[in-house]
Length: 183
Image 1 (spheres, rainbow, N blue to C red):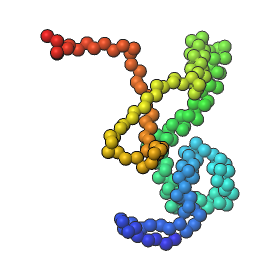
Image 2 (image 1 turned 90 degrees about the vertical axis):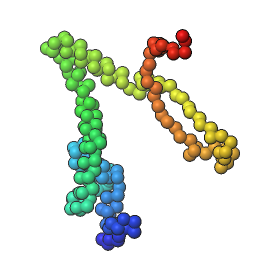
Image 3 (image 1 turned 45 degrees about the vertical axis):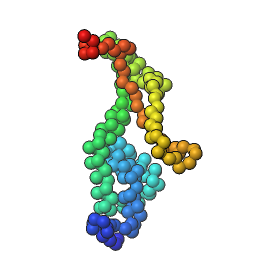
Image 4 (image 1 turned 180 degrees about the vertical axis):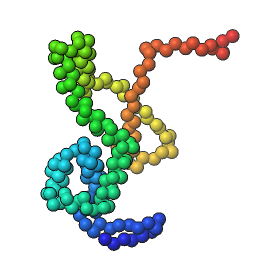
């Protein structure tokens, strides 16, 4: 593997010399390997997705640069909360079975059975079809007559879309401040 210096910062630049070097730059692969190391994905799932045989899989662990990239991704995922979110999502998929067991257990207290039924109802009603519809509003900014369009048709790349959900406010807001203009 040859190294050159970056003309801007002077740091060494590695050139891809092996297939593993291409994998280091594949963010999806590095993320999947980090997820495997965290116990979120199985070895079989990663090997199947990237079509690795056993020998190729074993050789990946011998590449120090690749291992460092995976470790860095693990740290990044821990710091931004992705690891915890994905683990919680996996555990959450087991919640309906646990709640169903509690709800069907004749030896459980009636209070626990009712709470389990309420929670199951909440989980069952939490799908995309039950999502609250949001108000949509469009803000148009006219730059005046000095703004020249490049063509007669507007370019979709010139449009900025801001997805915003308005806050829930009471139906009527009463102003309880005193009016300084009235005397």
